[in-house]
Image (cartoon, rainbow, N blue to C red; front, side):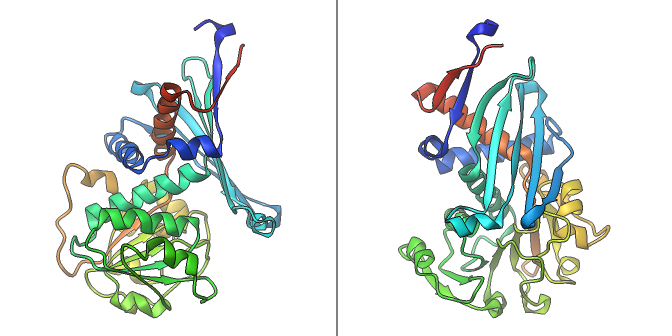
Length: 320
């Protein structure tokens, strides 16, 4: 394409929603883990900084040289958005042509982040949780928590009951209604971890959500919320009782739950795609999820290709 014929595809919230199909997201995220495990892709150094007003801004970037895939996500957390009726988590994702540095696609990243994170969590459940798990306890009732429960019910058809712990302890009727046709949904307190087969923590909290001793043998935990230095959701002593996996170990040791565990042995989830871990019935397993750029890039590349094929989005001239 000649320089004056170059174009840029813009995918806003509605365009992304029209293209974001769960099966395609699951496939894209699995590919990201496989590329990472094979060291066929790179995860560039993370930017994560606090802003005035308790906001957090970050950039996650990376590439897959053999696929000419390059890009980044600029994202973060702006809690004051809630006062205006908006979502606190905000994200924008850009794909670039690695040969020229020119942008190919800019996509609203909010729904992408929710879906790819939930898909990664579902992959963790498939690889680590007991396949006969029936009881799920989720901390949080926001966009991330809902996405994780949605994908978990697909990944583990054995799930029969969801206990949810809201931030203020109140009953969340909209949360219950979303899943009531597929399982029993029950408001709960932190004590519900004692009967859980699977625990998902999806909060912005900076303090442990439950007691380590309450977690029974055989439980699997997807830890989602710790994504910044100083944040944590899991109690002291729990990581030491468990077998721990992360999406990216250096990043998890910097900003995930593993930041609290020093040199505790851990591995990366992608290693299990070709060689699933042997799981003893009493093992406690943890997936420390900090989210990596490759998940965003493979997912948005899928959206980009589908959008071009279906004439979705705003395709504008971008000469240079």
